Every structure is written in structure tokens, then in C-alpha cells.
Length: 358
Ligand SMILES: *Cc1c(COP(=O)(O)O)cnc(C)c1O
Image (cartoon, rainbow, N blue to C red; front, side, top):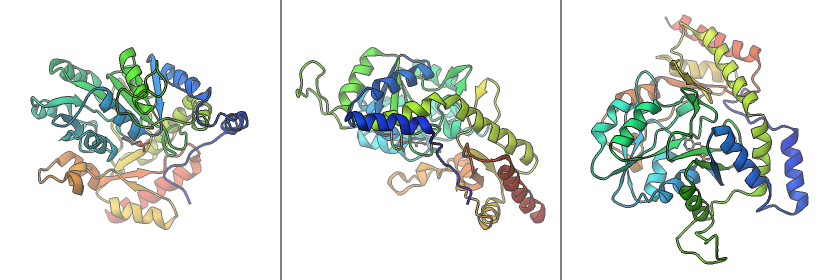
């Protein structure tokens, strides 16, 4: 079977984890600050605050910025459910914006019409490894005095105008789930250049405990800490991240070359470095392609269902671009372990479907 995603775990992961376990430092330990510092450096920001998932990272960011009941937060409807759920966790309201047909990401031209007196923040999502149009988003945020929390859970190392995602907004949030660009099993990280926000995020992830006075809790926090064992895996993964990203890009180049004129390929935008977390294509023959690949034991995934269609968030309104992307979109196998032969085989199967149908 060829899976849609698969982690690559090397020798150093095992070495560092073994060291963490043998040392007895399984919860706290040296790998946590090492991983945080190196990851922040990788993103080109000052501080990294690790936590136990990408969703916790987003939740911590909202709490640290004081987003609360009665506030509105602008998010794309075309994203993973986590982006909306975290807004609910703080009792604020997610306000949806459609995608741009050119970038598939949140459409900056449609953000301003959704801003009200209650709007406090925008969460742009760099979906499937492709950065959002950050110049335009930051300009809108500045004009309306809004916070920006980047959901970079799928885009480690992606760049907009040669600057890494996660470094544009007030806080950038990453996930290290097993299918992401680097993994810790479960895990996440907030990154920021703001020392005050760093302090707040560190206190909030540790049950709100004061840094000056042990077991004194001036605010309500969470246990969202990352363990030393998870950080040990993350550090080893981070040592190889550029190689992993290059392999993702290689996959995308092979797919793009072999599938051109067959299906619609992902956006290719000047000044934007897509890290192709998952390779996506669009086709009117989506169901037929999924079926043909499945018969060959090749796994696929549909692109995300727009959140305004989900029961907890349901709206009658139409968001045509997000709906079209979901209707036509397929994630093809995107593991860095994929062999050129396998990609060729996947592309041949897709081509046959299109040729037979037309
Ligand atoms: C994976 C993901 C998250 C959440 O990360 P978890 O580690 O699974 O909690 C948030 N947003 C997006 C866009 C994601 O893909």
C-alpha cells in the first residue's frame, strides 16, 4: 500500500529518545529548550514555546492575546477544523472568508468586508505548505489594529518573499503531528519575537504558574507542556528538516511534470516558496481518480471540507471557491519516502482515467 503520508524516523531520533529515557528526565529536560531554540532559529524568530499539539499552540496564542467571549476572529473556511475549534475554545466567534481561486488560501480582498467593531484577530492558514499573501494580510491587520496568528501547522520552512512563515504575525503556530513536515508524535510550537508574549505563553502552557513563585497561579492556564521525550524526537527531525523539505519539493516537481495538462496543479506563485506538505490536484474526475488509485492500493485524501458546512459551524451562505476546491481536490501520496517509480505509477493511473473518460 502507498499511504498518503508517512513519517521518516531516523537513527538520531532513537538515540536522543534513548538518552532522554535513560537519564530519567522524561517530562522536563534539556531537549525542550534545545528544540525550542533551534526551531525558532530555523523560523527566523527570537523565541519558540513548545507545547503538546498544534491545536494547543493556536489555543495558547488566542489566550495570550486576550481573545475572549464577544470577540470575532477571521479565518478561512477552507482549512483544517482545528483553526475554527480553537476560536470556540475561548468563546469567541470564527468569521469565515472564502479562498482566492489563484492561491487557494484566504482571499485578502474578502477580509475587509468581514471586519466589524468586534474583530480582534486574523488567522491566515498556510494550507498544504503554501504561504498566504502576507504583505496584504499584514497591511489590513495594521490598518484595523488586529492581531495576526499564523496557522503554519502545514508549512514548516515555507517562505513568502524569502521570509519564513510563522515570522510575520504576532505569533506563529506549528504542529508536529505524525503526518506533518517534521513530527514529535504529537506536539506543537508557538514562535514569536515578542518577549512579553513569550512569557505569557510559557506561563499559560504550565497551568498558569508564576515563574517567580513556585505553585502560585495568578492566571488560569493549561497543561499543554511538551515532554522531553517528544522534544528529543523533534530535535533529531529538525536536524534533517531542509533535506525533508527538498524531498517534498522533488515529489511536487515529479508530479507536476508528469501530470501537466491532465489535472489542475497547485498554484505556482512568484516570490513564494511552497514546501508541498501534501501534493494536491483538482479534477472534475475526482471520484474516478480516487477509485482507480484505490484499486491499486494507493491511498488518497479529499481536500478539506469547508468549515461552514460542518454541523457546529453551519451557515447557509455560500463560499464558492472553498466549495469548488473541496469538490475537485485530491491529496496524492506525499511521503518523503516515495520512490520516483511510485510517483510515475500514480501519474500513469491518473492519466488513464482522464483519457478513458474524455
Ligand atoms: C494539523 C493542523 C492543525 C492542528 O495540529 P494538531 O497537532 O493536530 O493539533 C492546525 N491547523 C492546521 C491547518 C493543521 O493542518
